[in-house]
Image (cartoon, rainbow, N blue to C red; front, side, top):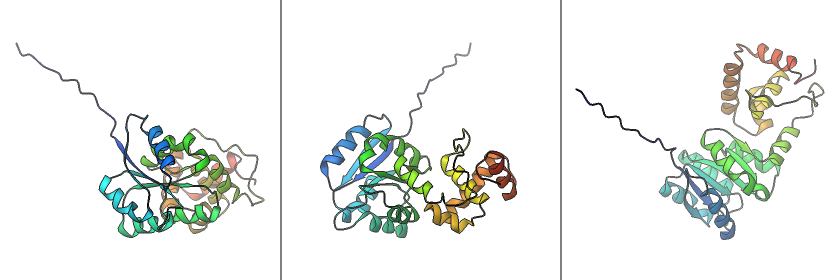
Length: 230
């Protein structure tokens, strides 16, 4: 008789290694305590000084960096530029006391994947880390509303349209609207503060999800779902 032995393996979710960079220790401690309530989150390290962030993230092998935009000596924008130049793959979520569109535009073009204002960081930080780790973008509600309102100036846009869809993300809905309003990839990237490459990636994903083969098909979808006015 052949005895077969089966070993049951428990598959654990991979740890998401997080680095916190902020010049206020109280904020770091509060976010660290909150993040570590999630079983697959690990706060791998912290930085209080902007000049050490790049080296600290490298040393910690962090997957996600939560970065204060106003770090001393070297701010978040300079840090993002360094990440770009050295092609560090860590995903970055910006923390800021401000929801200024110029700042949001600049950091998103430099590769940040999320933007949270500090007054809502505690409410959104866990969801934000999970989203950017999976390759998505994440904005707090006030920031997303400000971005969306920045292109609500077309008479063709149906301002009363319901933009929730179980298949598409809010960002994908925004891109469909702009494509239907005949914005180019470059113009969409400028409106939404993302790179032209990201716009093209979203466009391909949208067409795949909706089984649409052309830009004309996207326009028809927008009209059919009342996202724009004829």
